[in-house]
Structures are given as C-alpha cells and as structure tokens.
Length: 268
Image (cartoon, rainbow, N blue to C red; front, side):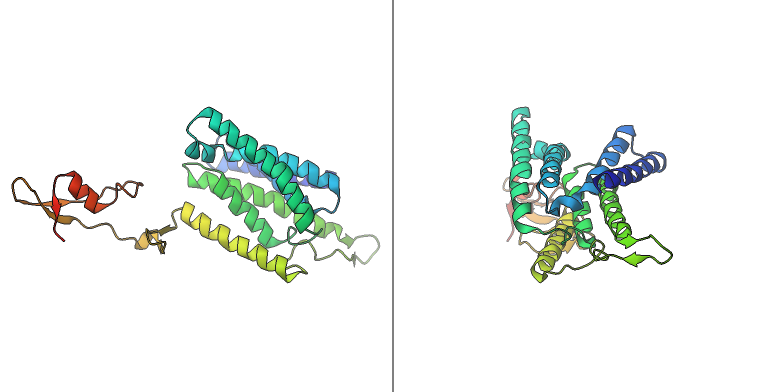
C-alpha cells in the first residue's frame, strides 16, 4: 500500500499546490512546500504501523522535515546561526529516535493515528510550527498536511472494500481508518485532549484569544485598550497623561512604568 499512498498523495499535492499557486498569493517556492507537505501528510497515518521498517523511514523523513518547518521558530529563540543549527540537530535526534521509540511503545496499527481527530491535530501542529507573517499562508500549509492525511484515510477505506464480483463486500478493516474514536478509551481521551490543547495554542498564536498577565484568556476583540494614567510632574506640578504603547513587550505596555519613565509621579 505504500506505493499507492505515495501516488495518491502526490496527485493530491500536485492539484492542491497548482490551485494555491493560481488562486492565492503564494509564490512557486511556497507552492512547492505545500506539495511536499501533502506528501508528508499522506505518510503520517502509518506512523502507527506494526512493522519496523515503515516507522524507521517515516521518523527519518519527519526528523529531516520538522527542523526545516521550525527554522523561523528557532530564529526567535536563538539569535545566532550556530544555535539555530544546534536546535535543528537536537530536533532531528528527538524526532528520529525518541519519536520512533515512543511510537513503537504506545501505538497500535489502525489506532487513533487513523482517525479524523488525528488529521486535525496534524493540521494544527503544522499551523503552529510554520511561522509566517501571513496567517493565510500558515492556514494553507496546514490544509496541505490535512489533505495528504485525508487522502491516506480515504484510500485505506477504499481498499477495505472487496470490489470483485457483482456485489462489493466489506473487509474486516472497513471503518478502521475514518473514525472519530478508537477501540481503546484511553487512546481516544488522549487524542482529544491533545486536539483541545492544539486548538487552544493555535487560537492564542493566531491572535484569536489573548492570555493576560493573570493567565486568564480573553478574546482579542473584547480586549480593552489601556486608558491614560493621571500623573503629576515633579518639576512643574502640572497634571500629565501617559498611555501605554501598542508593543508586544509586557514591560513596555505597563502604564505605571511609562508614567515614571516620563518623569511623572502616579496618583494612586
């Protein structure tokens, strides 16, 4: 089935990347990235394979691909080229060997990796990993991975039907690929917990909600702009107003510190 999955995901990737290139503002390089992500997404469900060779090949592929997708995230953390390379190497080793060991120990074939919640998780993780100033491009890349993932699930279900003869017959594997829950409740709960965590993280990263200093989430649309603080100049005794700027640094948004930086005394 590996060749069939590669062929189907490749065809889906070609169609999706071409459509994105024509109908969206992405360039040829980004279309090529989307094509590659469709192919990777088409291989992801087989991470729960009960055979050793597919897991080795897939974890090696992911180990090479994940650091490239995360390179802009690495640049936010490490400000030197050497540090970025070091993070990439560590990520490769973690995915290649740590991920392979965890998959062999914790997964079963046709488990929750072959499910619709897992498909959504793959898209959300791609959205979080693919850092771009254009939020639309991030959504397109997430869609590319989900497209490849969905092609794998649909092909598995198609092959779960015996089409020989006048009346198609269902095999034992029918219904094990496209599903919302697995046979093990613990795996299903873990999958939906991870899905909820990814949705929450994507909402924060996409500026749909914001977490304030107290850790309380709120919608960005409901966020109130800081009001001016009344202060008195220590030199002239005149009243003065100071507003916090619209920066991302919490220290810069602190109105008390802004007033004090202007030489004022806050009236408490």
